[in-house]
Image (cartoon, rainbow over all chains, first blue to last red; front, side):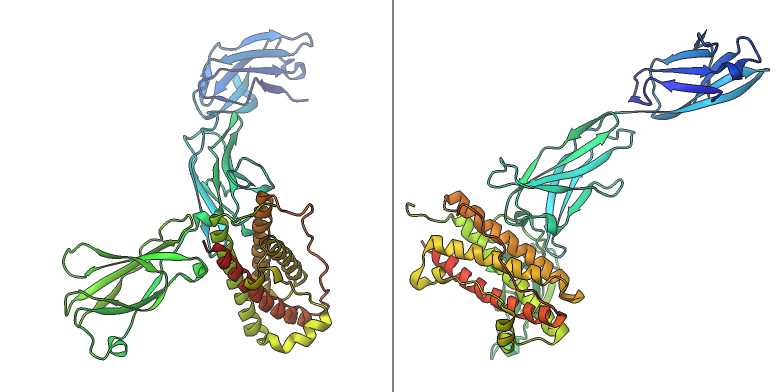
Length: 308
Length: 171
């Protein structure tokens, strides 16, 4: 039989809420002294004269204490017996205080065409000081996401991470799905706003690959104000109709970018004229899905070419 | 049913979806050639016949005699057939399994796209076609050779589908 035992109104409370605890000292343990004094410690602080001690019908001693406002997020409550002028620890209880989860926000998703997975990220909201689990939840839908079709397996992020990747086998491409984030801890649950999206409409498009063409193999007498180049789209997105933009500027000096577009997403030969002769240029290109929703890719790394 | 027309968004998305599946079937074919030296589907016609590999028809999608509803149904049924065939190729070989899985998922999603469009138009058959009976490949070679044939015919099938979609997209 335990010598002393602490019971708590709740081991986890909201920060600043009260906590009531009782410590019951069994008769077998307290028989040495008729009314042994039960003392409490919160963390390192001895709580003088704070417990209301009574003898129970079964002869055990019980002290009840109320902490009006628990302000530390994680601490220990100890029950001591004052025995022969020495404090004897009988039991201890772990106390947590924090907040219910805030609503996760800024949920956004990107479809990765290399891994064929949909990665969503979010802002977790204010720290709750408590172990809080985040789960990315979703279901297949159609049209404007008013109907719930098949559920999709929950995506549980690694500890402390605010992103999760739904693997290809759980996705239905070219149809809308509903996605949201659930945050849960001992004090409650909260849900982010829902997104309604087709994974293929949030593809993370990579820029095309620019490459130089040898002017002499292109034309008999290359014009000094022209450059020749070719490009092709990022391979995993080959099947997507895209339009692109080309920008260029002299490498030296602070000239701003000049831009050409829209351009097709692949060409084996492009002639860029109207440039300064004998000048080194930096060229970059970006693309976006054509006729269907999508975001611009980032600009490609610079291709550096020199006019003759 | 009254004259049915397909939404432009369906045309755009299903065309992209067809090109995506086509590209993946080509990847599968390239891997079968590189890994197992099976590079010529035309040499496997007899084997395909003996294995009883069924082929999907898109007769209603030919521009000469295009029937929209018939074409959608044949497209959806054909995609279900290829989904079943790809499923039967499970365990084809370690080098191929991820490609076959991805292709099967994309074919299945494309079938769903077409089926849901038919439902939205109110012309979907009462019951969705099942995957159908597919051959039981009994050796690694049969699965790999079957894989070459399936990938090859799927690309032809999708080329016809793309042509029909382009034809239907014309104003």
